[in-house]
Image (cartoon, rainbow, N blue to C red):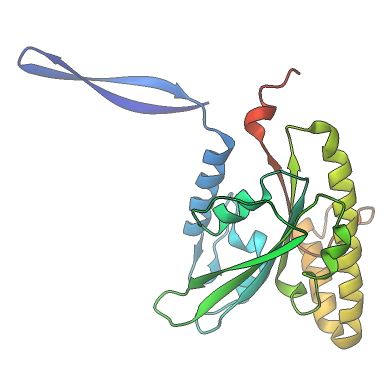
Length: 239
């Protein structure tokens, strides 16, 4: 629980007395995410990644830290997950769009643009959403290609209100993403070995080159985030 101070003004006749009371307040998961995002904006100035304890843009788009003010950046975000797990709502929130979410048919594409400060250049985020849960996972090869692999990020959404589907969704999509990413990197090695080796090296660096489990884990050479949706329903479940 977080504690905050609230001033309560009490009027008594012509005099006003102010008292300070400590009121307990519990922040929901979305409040914490917003707080982390705002903190990340402060830690990312002028294309320089300032280290801090909170989530930073470079964790989602690692290549962005190599960007300069004189260059546009194109990033690709691939979102997949369980059926009706609020994937579209998350994308609309990410793009800051006030729209009514609609059911996703197969594989859908949208994009977002951001103008750089004091510049005519714009950064572009290509956003792909896979509908149908795990049934259409073979369509992963469309958004994950050699052209975008260096600036690719993957998000997998699981439905916390249906715990029985979490493991199946994660296992299937993780395997599909891992297989596709490794296949693309293998193809990239034939064209540009240095870029392929750099992707693998960056992945290991994020995990930790001195991590005791580095030799036994099977890393996915692309930033991947797992989101649990519908926590408001999950929190009311019986233990």
